[in-house]
Length: 270
Image 1 (cartoon, rainbow, N blue to C red):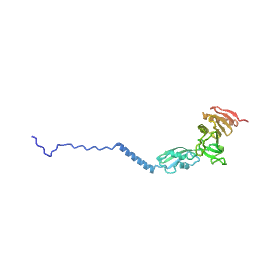
Image 2 (image 1 turned 90 degrees about the vertical axis):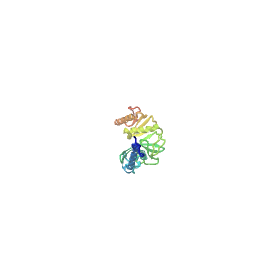
Image 3 (image 1 turned 60 degrees about the vertical axis):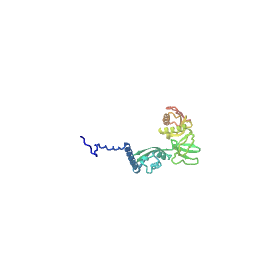
Image 4 (image 1 turned 180 degrees about the horizontal axis):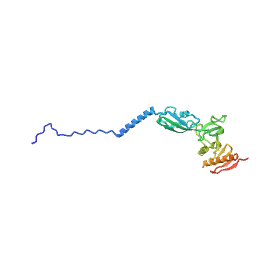
């Protein structure tokens, strides 16, 4: 016979499990680590990672100190905030310098690579003489009333270029030639003469007609090159023939060299 249950009796119930712990999001962890790393980098950047040594390569007459000053690297600069574009603009504010590139060496060294422009060309315009580099940068000017050439200019070593019909000549700026074709003839001729180490033997280039180019050597040989096609072969052939004519005792004359690999020589009139 069943007995009545006590009033305070309650059936057994298992305890409820504790609520699950909320796991930290993986994305939050990654962000926290990145923030920490960024903070470390900022601290290192501001306190330790400064450019302490700057080397200059490619300068000849211009001192490394002058290049560094133009580049804006004469004061502390953060390794990570080196601005190549700004450095290039600073270096090329000196008309005699060309910026080639830079190389950083962790954690505190940097090398600047430059080239120096050399006065090679003399152009007469509006009664003044302008002295240019092979890329068309106007380096110096000599007015008609000035008796001496600017410092560093050897008039006897200049190549006189005629026929450019320049639209603008300003010291510290690139020459604006009469046309794109004239500028192309100027640059390509000088570049090829330099590569073949023949520029020092040339006294004049005539680019009046870019389809009919002439060069004149310092000892009186005039070579007709035609247009700019196959320029390397044409100048190489002229160079070889001129050396041979000199060996033979010939002095001056005309060389028809508009066909690559061929030269027709006409001696100078007696």
